Image 1 (cartoon, helix red, strand yellow):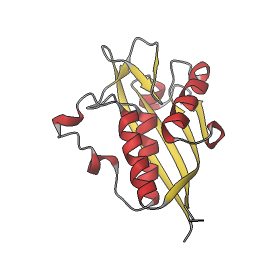
Image 2: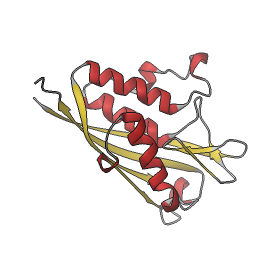
Image 3: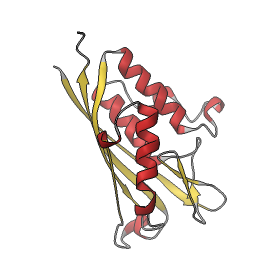
Length: 162
């Protein structure tokens, strides 16, 4: 099979005293995401999508939260490692489609910066990375501003040798 589809999901709790980092971009907000690494839910969901497409497990397998080596880790560096893993296996990214679910802050002004940063790290064109943002209309924990979640889908293509 020359095409693979993977999906990823991540959610982190919003807390005081942490930066809010999404797609490698620090976003001004009074709350940030709680996690062992920088808790970048967008990047984490994208990595899980990539790994899932090739049946390689999830990010917890490669970067376990029990390992102090990953405490405070920059998720973009982890994304680079996952991208290297898939390219070593002969695959390349077709495109990503991700949706961030957050009641606040409003993310639309930051989407282009996220897109630019992620496409740069992945060595792909910005038009191969779609990032959308929505709210949960004040419903559930996300709607009550207790967390942020992301769904991400990726298409990978077998890198045919010329």
